[in-house]
Image (cartoon, rainbow, N blue to C red; front, side, top):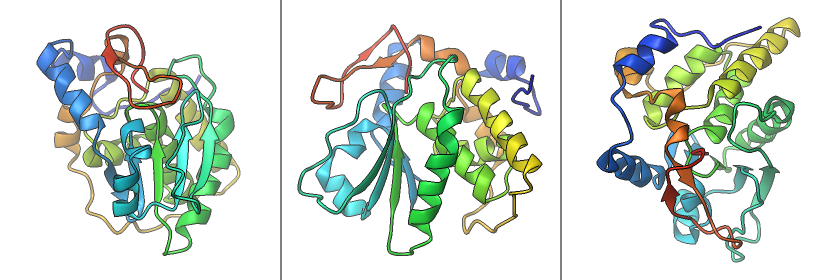
Length: 231
């Protein structure tokens, strides 16, 4: 079985990371989740809060949205030209996100090929599901390894923490691409990540057991609880 590799090891990562169940830390994560992060030029990562905020979407110039969340969000009706892709996936280690990665990465690439477009990829909080999709895009179209992609994305958005099931599937996705000789190295016009700083900021994968984002039937941004996944 393929597995996510880390230069310092998952166990060391989790041992070095501070506990995240303190109310202040949860509040900090919650607040950070409301803020979109630019990963590469014109490619943003966020939680649901940004994705349904008309003012933010307009200010960012978003033209395409990939939602990686159980229910299709209700985006602002005023944005009539918005193009969307909905990927219904739960944030748990058994969820099959792998089957959606080809479609999602192709959607992102097609949009970004036009310099007029801006893409937003989101889940509930921009911590687990949507970072996995963004990492898959970097693996497929920027020729990064899964670890390089995760290291890079965490340098741009410090709260990301894909669950271990998604990390394993990202490894499988990369292996499939390598087998098909689809990877081509491409330059990314942003500074390289500070690996050590990124590792210190990376949240351990099991923090998803502490926090859950829930939202009402209208899919507005919900409240945090201590019984589920982060999204």
